[in-house]
Amino acid sequence: DGGITQSPKYLFRKEGQNVTLSCEQNLNHDAMYWYRQDPGQGLRLIYYSQIVNDFQKGDIAEGYSVSREKKESFPLTVTSAQKNPTAFYLCASSITSGSLNEQYFGPGTRLTVT
Amino acid sequence: KNQVEQSPQSLIILEGKNCTLQCNYTVSPFSNLRWYKQDTGRGPVSLTIMTFSENTKSNGRYTATLDADTKQSSLHITASQLSDSASYICVVSAGREYGNKLVFGAGTILRVKS
Image (cartoon, rainbow over all chains, first blue to last red; front, side, top):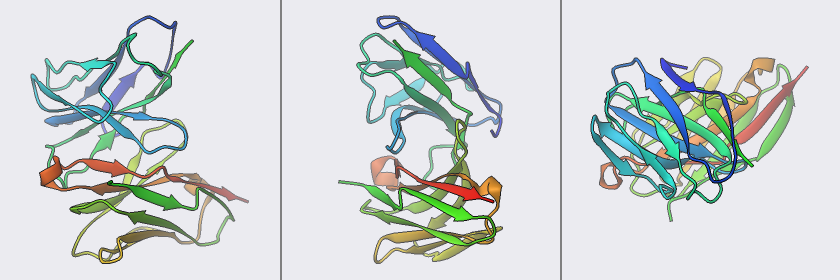
């Protein structure tokens, strides 16, 4: 999976609890991304970061938060404010956020909230 | 609205046969189009990326075509193998004016059977 690790692979939480998904890359990439994948839908961008200590909201940022304190790490917190948190979450990185730069994806974390 | 539509939704073929997957998009302005392969429960892996001026690109048994005038792309798989069973995702980049945002199709699920 191109030097990007996500943990854990499966995560179960009770409704009302916050949960943090890990994403680490050793590719020395500046840009990192979080996507959400639901059955029958295309990937949707949650947050992205073009450089350390900077990040921007994507299309569906409500109920999520991120941090980018280190170049290698971009953790995603799913808060209790997210109405439908159960989904497959994918982290990706690219050299920069330029349009032709390939995004390399991690193996994903499947979150189930009951 | 920027959209990427893929067809068919799913496809079953016999090992050794060829198949073609379709992608129509309305994303504008257009920067580039990518095809990704996603195995079940894994992150997507890039197959090809084509810019406006390219109308065909190959990667082994995978050949992608692009008609930027009609906003259509296809992915042709030759001599299919069981390992080709996966979801194939068409992705269009909207260009720098839109932050190089990627718009993802929902994917075509391909099953190759022996």
